[in-house]
Image (cartoon, rainbow, N blue to C red):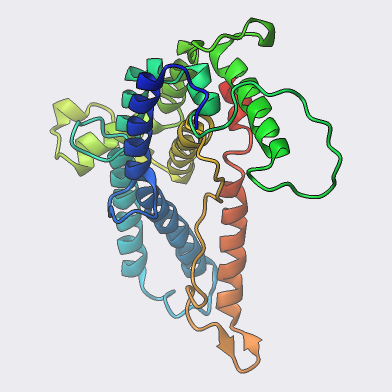
Length: 300
């Protein structure tokens, strides 16, 4: 049962939303889903940062006498990260990428009207305020939960559409500035430099005239990290805010026990494992904070 009056548009939106989430969701059988690409990118980057820190800082490390290991790690790190970011920003019509989804949603923005945004899943479009007479958590199908979803979605769409609450209509649409803001995010944060380096050094072997002053040495950890941060924030803006995924998961996926090697030595943690775990936790904390203010910045 739906309260959306334009049922044809709702049907079209439902089909497109299903398509967008099938290209994104990690739970699908698709090996190249956007979220799987992101997880691999994040895990590869953090794993390298942890391992190279151990390699450089721990004097007793068995890998310390092997400079070739450091060279191979660094070479593989930058190449894999550049390719991962390049793939996620590939706008070709036959790929699964963040860029392609953003382009398609921008093209199909007329499907996301206020009534569809609020009520596509059966949430009431307009609901009278209810007096809460019970305490504790409410079930997802309770009148109070429905009221909360209705109110929150209307308020979010007020910001998406730039329409004040007292001027709401069912046919309000997302303001073009929202998509312009996402495009602006993708044009900054070192992303363009990464794409240039990818084109000149990784995907192609450009000659001196084509390369100009661009050198691979200009790439550093902070640039990789900022490009990842931009991708994470745009991803959340699209799937969690514009498409109302209803699920919010940490940026960094969980890794299995023993991921850093032998965990126990008798009854104690191995020293190097403890150090690597601490380093991992520090990197994880930073990355899981990346999406925290996405909504505020998107509507700023």
